[in-house]
Amino acid sequence: IWTHLSKRQRSLYSEYVDSGDSAVADVLSGISTSPLEAVTWLKKLCGHPILVEQNRHESFESLDAMDPEELKTQSSKLQVLDALIERLRRKVHRTWVFSQSTKMLDIIERVLQRVKLARIDGSTKERDRQRFVDMFNSDHTDVEVMLLSTKAAGIGLTLTGADRAIIYDPSWNPAEDSQAVDRCYRIG
Image (tube, rainbow, N blue to C red; front, side):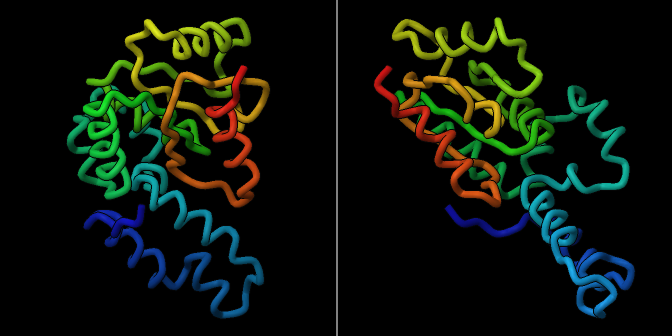
């Protein structure tokens, strides 16, 4: 699904690209031959402006105090995700949401707080991982959405409880995304 940038994202994008001291300017002027830093920054911006703002450390410390609606309005991609999750819930689908970034998962979790969800990422204890998977895979669960970091989900999990998968921020290596999503469709 393609979407446009929000006003906040567009403003930060223009500011960054037009800035004389950005990684983009360095690449265009020949100072740097690696555009990876600039592209990575822009990729984070597409996820949510909080991921690239200067005071992001303070923002993440106060994430729980932030209004989910305000977080959502700052990112068009997050608005689309929220609407898509709501649509899938109404049609009684259970969904996995994959992200490369645990910070992005924090934001998604805050915005989807009205939804019964579970989460597995690199910080999830080994003993809890299988419990969360079993809970979500159960036919009698009330958990509708599972948030996963793509790398954590790509290793040793059988995630048959979902019938929909959303990759919020695709990996540079499509095989990582495929490996994670393929976990949804295993037959035990």
